[in-house]
Image (cartoon, rainbow, N blue to C red):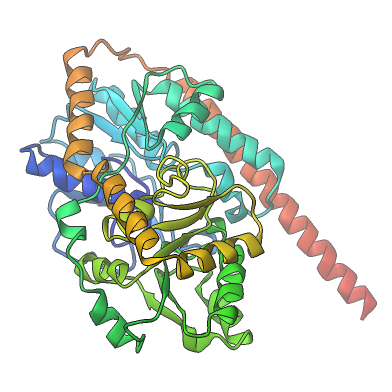
Length: 423
């Protein structure tokens, strides 16, 4: 497993890699995870995890960017002969995955976890060209792989429309259902001084701009103003947390809003069980793992229609899905969930739990095992995988990045010079 994000980082990719790794190991496989170093120490003592030296807080984010050190990884893989190389990103560690797969003559599997064109705000100048580069990069990488995994059918359709010819299979990240159904939401409510009878809107995820949290905050605030006894429970951390806190404080709603920060294990599960409805406004998801986790805990969803989301949320069955990004409509949907009859609420909860059963980690890991076994059995891959074309593509992106950095610097200098002249 080769990934640019892994525990203790909080995010869908890190959690997906960790979940599949744990389940595959329980099947009797040996799985080595190759991931960047992080400033924070891992929560537990790691087994079979190779940490690559990395630049921390890359470009002001909470991501770590690996530092290529010739021979570093191979020195750690000397005694390990992989049958499968599974890449979870098309760049950085993804480039390394291509080289390792070629060296060991092993099939290369690639999971498209992320719609990277939604993340171009992390580069110096967010230009449409960068979005197209992101799409082209992912498409090219997928076509270099021997198998593509899509976390949802809607993402699989997008990849095919973009020109991915490599066989693509839809396998979502699963959930350890037996763990998620057992939670103590009451303890979370008590610790946050939330009354037992209060209606609680919940959200779990990385608090970052690409998650559309400004919209979510506005919609929840509109709902809370009309429902002074309701509360908003937020689990996660990230660069947008302060902005969210400040927003609710300005609207004098801070007593109804609770930020729990990073939560893992049973604490996270208990938080889900404290929620009456799960609010989700992201449009950059490939699956929306948190949606299925919330449903496992019995929380139906209110969400915007988007790829990944529409595969999980079925309107008026296990939640409400909104076709338009309108604050008033989202707030009204929360209001509807708050005031629906007991019978309607129980039907929502029942359907949410039924949906979650389709995302059993055991079943999802079994499907990916079948893919691995098929690739190993039919290992007729092109061992002369054309790395030149891939390196050329990477160089193009690097060149574009350097041009954008140069443009940013030039604009900054021009503005500074202008201010100097005016003064």
